[in-house]
Image 1 (cartoon, rainbow, N blue to C red):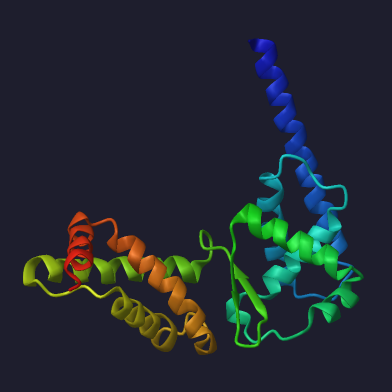
Image 2 (spheres, rainbow, N blue to C red):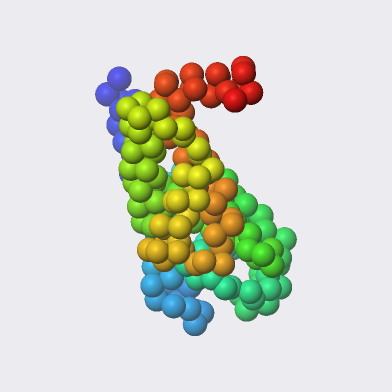
Length: 216
């Protein structure tokens, strides 16, 4: 048992040390390009989270650092980012197919949210770590709780669509947490949050069942 524990400890120590070296190499690699220092640091952080969740490190890790920067550079708050993918790939000397593959891998492993603007350009954020989005969820909890208390005490109807509209108005048009140009894309995301939160209330679920039964 002791031998097994020691081997496991050595394995994780070795993997962690390799990860640290990989981060250092990735940082030095990004230093070769003229990119914003804050975005570079956020790229390193993103790739650290990504590689921690990978069972095996990829052979060509540098393309993932480029893909990570592509993702970080396209946070919704950076709107508009309308540089073509081909222009980006020429800048960093990477094939479009390699960029697409690496972005998809990072997106899948970290469960990032991707939205498209009206011109079909992509934007990414991490719903579990993005500060603005975490605030959105807190505001949504408050709105849903208030609506459910009115439903229980005053018998006022609960409308998830209306609640999502309220959330968009407060978060985007009043607090300016995300660009107004993306309000339609965020409305769908916010409505999903509202519906999920409402689903925690058994009374709301029963209310929905009655609506479906009697077509109220």
